[in-house]
Image 1 (tube, rainbow, N blue to C red):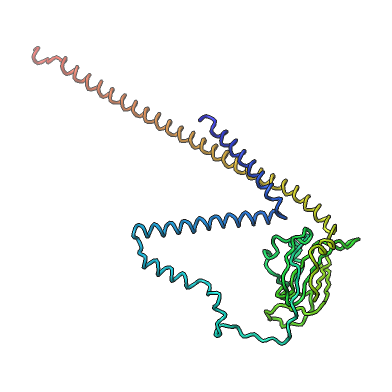
Image 2: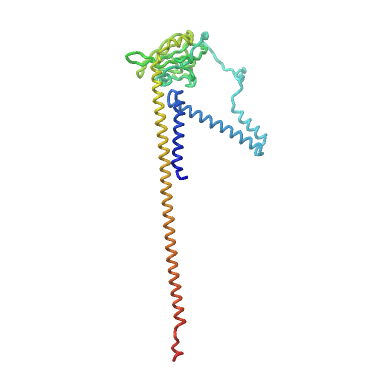
Amino acid sequence: MRYKYEFLTLLAMSAHVYATYLLILESREFESLEDLGISLYTRASTWCQEKYVKAAADFRKFQLETGWITTTTMSNLDYINSIYEEPPEDFYDQPWNRKKTTTTTTPAPPRTCAVCRGGNYRRRQDLMHSTIYRHEDYWDNTDCDRGKIRVMLCPTTCAYIFIYRLGEDKIIDSVMMDCSHQLIHRSKDIPLSKPRFSWNYLEFLETVKYEVIRDGFNITYYFEIASSPSVSVILDNLEGKFAHILEEREMEKRNRAVHIVLIMIVVFLVWHTTIWFCCVWYRVCKGNRYRKRLRRRIEREEENNRNIIALLEMDQQSSGTAYRSTNSVDYDDVV
């Protein structure tokens, strides 16, 4: 094909445009490009893991069918693998496996607490120094300002963390609601007496409030004994307070689309430049090889011509000597 390079370039450009369109559509479901990258990486790793497991199962089946290993060997391997599995569910219910626990206080009656996060809470977690929370995935698929709220029983108190932006007006930036049980391990914002190297979580058994200002934000902790209000009441209390956050998110989505387009353009330019450089380098190397072959061919032809000329000269010399020897006169005979 004469224009194969141009055809491949056009095909790659079409693929980049389609991939850019898909990434822009999918990015609207995430808060940032980092979340999109994490999601793509997770899906890719999951897909690779599934393919690896399937390939391993097919290879094991192939070994059994071909007789490389026997069923006895397979049973031994399964036994070895079972050693590292989790114990059964009733393992810890046995009398010799029960954990010895002692309580010095009477636990409070259970209450229902709302579990959600809203606003920019995921981005503001770094503001709370020396604090260990639950994993980020714990609050996935929750949004306080959109009514995506879970409800759970809590043995201690309900926790509410509000983060406000400081300025002329105190504007709410983010919120988090959860049960305080095993929520906070250690925090400089909460002055509770606790051994320095204790690994126990902070327990809040009464209604209390803590407030701290850091990096232009006001962080307020509420711990209440009463149960959380209903979802409708929470939505009414938060109605209209995250309008600026929604506007910022829409603006970020537009900027995100621009960033994705720019990234894909850069990727395409890098790819195109690399391919172009490789093609130019290939053509230069091909031309050099052709010139070298042509030079060697010319040198061989010149050498062959010189050899032929030398042979002809030798042949002429030998022919002239023979002619003189046959036509020479014997003067002794003449005399």
